[in-house]
Image (cartoon, rainbow, N blue to C red; front, side, top):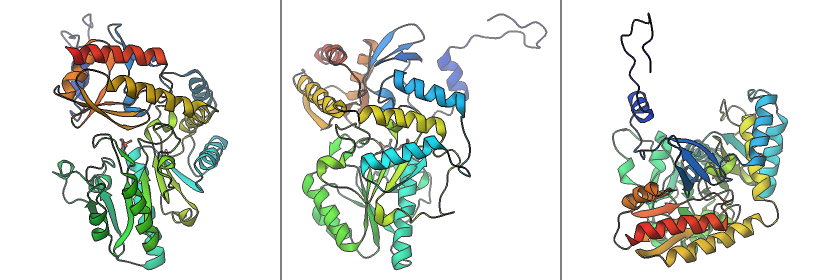
Length: 402
Ligand SMILES: *Cc1c(COP(=O)(O)O)cnc(C)c1O
């Protein structure tokens, strides 16, 4: 960069984007050494012009890939019409999205927010107030599962059943206890009269892409029904078609009292949603909760485009077909011990290589993958083509075979 005459600065050094960002952004993330510049479809390109097949989709957010045509059109149209107004007023796009989301999922009402953690905060507040309204004080405990992940706010960190997250930020929010996943005896022991809700991920994502056992999920629903405790399904990662059905709960044959969504809901725009069934749809009444940006028109427009795409005839069946193809190909690779998860939420247990080494090597070869605990984790766009699956898996095969 040239010297700026008369600016008072003798020299202006050119920083790389990585140096520039690291100098000014808090060091909370371990980032791969790549600057992503743009994307189309299921691939993105870095600053140097190198292209990557993206099996991570922004951690499951860009569910229709980069700049999907219908999505881009809807979002741009809304940006040019009205980018925001407050929730003191009504907007048609929020009304449309809420109605269609409720119709699709079978829920009565939704609260819109901006992230997964916020959606879970809403669910936790809702469960506590549901119980308070009916039974008064002292019935506020929420059971979550060991190895769960529910977010990074103080309350959702408290809900997260992993000790590594329970550091530094004391005191955490009271009123959570942790049940060992798939341990029905532990569940029964902890399900006392102070419990107002059980919160679970049908497939634990960050915890290592592990699906819950059907018997355990059945036991949660049965016990909660018996005690009038709410079941909260954290479908922030599993929802909106990720597992091959709109909600993962459909595959377990259950509808939770409350379901939270985020990640893929608006195709890469920040949005979260907390869905409530009829018996608790009006618990959060006027003044009980709120969000300045929640239900923002641009995010709702993006959400509508995603919803309409994902619920179009044949779309989810195709996700299921692609998931089966993926799983078959991955299971046959060298160095793969097993493949876990559900639908296009895929965990790969390796026989000897470390997941992070595989992710770094794949990056070198033009493929973006994620990790979760000791697994390689894939959350490919739902729109990924068979050719891209083939091409990406070929890179993984090469990396794993080295
Ligand atoms: C990602 C995730 C969250 C947190 O979502 P944010 O948008 O990062 O707040 C919560 N629950 C689950 C299951 C998630 O996968």
